Length: 202
Ligand SMILES: [Zn+2]
Image 1 (cartoon, rainbow, N blue to C red):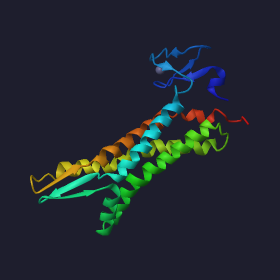
Image 2: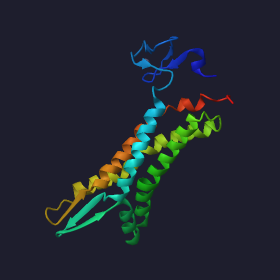
Image 3: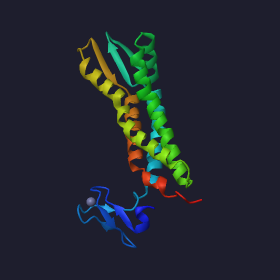
Image 4: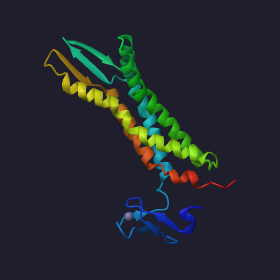
């Protein structure tokens, strides 16, 4: 049984349970936010954001995330070439962290969101609990993908020794930030209650 079956919905902002009218929408009597039984256009908005993130994932991995200029020599690194550089120079724990946070996590997150969107769209009645758990993991893990960007930002701020050495963020960094932000927004726009809407139906 869902709250929807009783004509009830909880306010997204303050959580108050509100009686929904038969037609139109209602504003929360406590905080005046509009109350909807499900997030409006949840699926199409999530799809749009997710597809944009997938497109941005390509330049995020192809373009350099940062360039180190020292003594007039410039060395540019993409995420993967940075990982390889760290690995070859014996710093494999850091290489592993960067690889997991910057390559693996965004990729798995996009796959997980695609799976959630497709199953909801196909009105799947299977594995509701696992899918809800998957959604929670996706939301929780999202913010940690920013580790790489923080590293670049920190390095750029710290290693600016005049003309001797400078670190500049590259085009890949912008694309990577776009991926992270877009997947976070896609996850935020997905309404996990949709997973349960076809429970018991067959
Ligand atoms: Zn409210």
